[in-house]
Image (cartoon, rainbow, N blue to C red; front, side):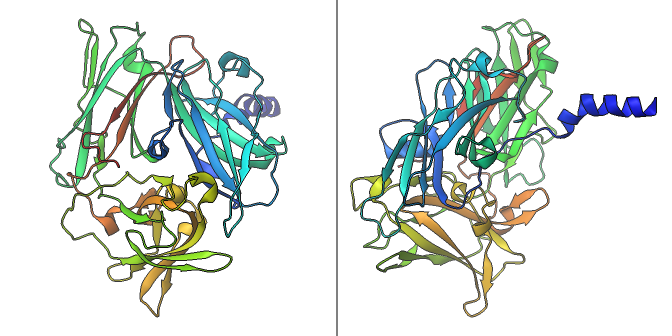
Length: 420
């Protein structure tokens, strides 16, 4: 009898124990500059979040480079996910109108670059259901040879969603944190038991690692069909952080901002950043940033994608005030998860250094320590209520009897947006 119970347990619960949770990740070191963003005509679209409205006609574009001499066969599969990024119970025909394997056929060779590469573009096909999705790209039509995974979201605008940055309800760390209050108007959609079936997720600067999930609202008014999340327990509070540092690699024949030196060899270009210092105890300084994102751009040639050079770029952080191993945090290092983001101490110069292969463009970054709960940038960069950040509010709903989490509301909150 005991053996039978064990077998029944494994049959029922083993799939849950081994449940896949997808994240943004590049598995192949030859794949560089991977970006997923709404397709548009200007380079600044690369900074934008991969979120589109259902049936809006807006397309998402995947772009990446392969450091290879010959093109490879890459395929893409789209996977519908729950709000926590594990596969949903939907079958592929329920969210796609075509067979779920797409070949990446749009590629071109780099032009007169020291390091040769092949540039690929892929337009994500439309889906028929709202929610979270993961784009899985693999080699040789074998999904076990996964090259990269990218998250994206498709929302259906059936709710009115609003948010604002307010001073925190708690006095502790008042000058360092930002509180996000959220209100949801559901007049246009009948919701069954919204207290238990509705979930609000907030993320800061397109990072999922520090998102907040708001489970219980502070007020629900059925007469006006309004739900408010003006919480007092700190669950909707974020560290304000600081403005991101940046390095301007749009030039190879001149030095961009925060570039100390450029050296062009016959087979490679070397670049060195200026020596950064710890900003923990400095005053807040307001300036332009792009909230940790990066974009490929070249101010010396016309074709950004094919004529931009790859540069061996060395970052330097003064060791003064550094108490642990620092990492470079930004979208181009997969928010610190890229092994190359880890810095090493150069005892001769008393600086921490890391060298990464980077394509010409504009890059935002910070420094942080790796902890058991993620990366801590506050210890090196400081944190200020005044800092400009991008916040996104996602409203998920699981209807009675439904097999997936709908994304029925979305709001982008950037009260002091400064972009070029």
